[in-house]
Length: 328
Image: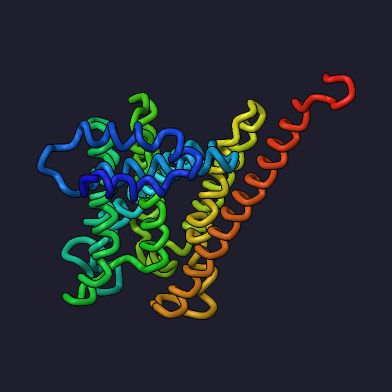
């Protein structure tokens, strides 16, 4: 057996055993036909494709096939939310002058966050004019800058947005990477439209009121409200889709519980950390607890769905068994 074939067969362990036995040879043969003759290792795209296919089949076997479409719906809502926040805070960076900011500034802007928010708005534009793979690249770049601004600002002693602003933005961005590959252009315009509305709100609320803006710690006054809006939107989508027999909305709601919780990171930590402080231990611990709670909730829902699916399959088999007496 060639090394490449053996490695593809090792990747097939991502699929359920029954599916591997039925179609494993066909899948490996297809990848081998498409691979170069001198290749010894699967390409990174093939690895991602095989693992994604394995996850889909395992979810389908567990009766949770709607989870992947639910994640895509959650990705769309996450991108809209992340872009809206970028529009709001990007405008806040511009209308807030260094004199009224009352703290060290980044040139004529309040903090280095202006670069981060600009990159998120650029990702929304790329999402409209380019294929989804390029939009994912732009979102990945925005994610990288959002995370990198913390060590860079510390290294060069520059002001940056607070952690309870950056952490939910990163989480929303990670979910946004799962945006659907094919979306109507009018739907792809939604993040930009929402970001424009958020920018107008920021200009109206914060212009000339920068001391008020700073007193609320760059996000503490608005992020919980944004989380509440996202929660209500996800609940409404779940109700509407459930009435049509579509479970996507319910899975999207479960997936979004983690970023919704992180949008409330400031009120959850302000009594411990204190206004304007960045206690990494407390914020990291609270973030980990929110991730653990959200992940546990999603895992419990998957387990319940798998158990109910197994029960339904057993009942279906019994309903099709023949009566030993009459043969019906």
